[in-house]
Image 1 (spheres, helix red, strand yellow):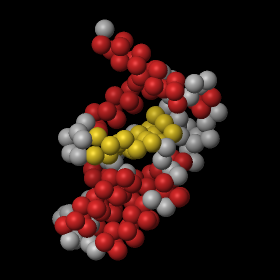
Image 2 (cartoon, helix red, strand yellow):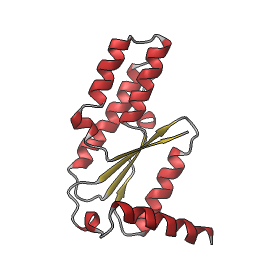
Image 3 (cartoon, one colour):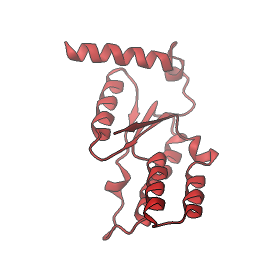
Image 4 (cartoon, one colour):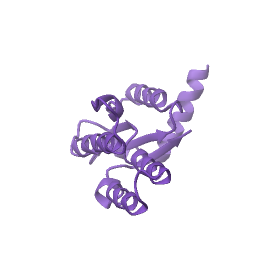
Length: 155
């Protein structure tokens, strides 16, 4: 019963983004979503739920591994570690932007997570406000920003 209710609601949400099903049939690039937010907010769980829902609906879905799981650092030097995880996500997004095999790409942390993290470093005095603005300007430039269609903050 709950599953049917969830699937009905999800179908209604999906139809608001693609009411005639045109995006699915005439895709120019995948719809890219970033889930970001606090630890243990449910990002990975929601990513998996969305992946399975859309796959059952006939969509091809890519869900890259979170950068924090892919980046190998013996010590997490900050902010370099976060630069590396954000760059991993951006590199993956750039690759997928030209990949016509997928309708949807769902990221567990990407550019907005990096932006929020840089504010944290500035607040702690790890970087200056000018450095923060510079890094944020790069993450949010039109080419990087244009890769993503939706950012969802979970807390």
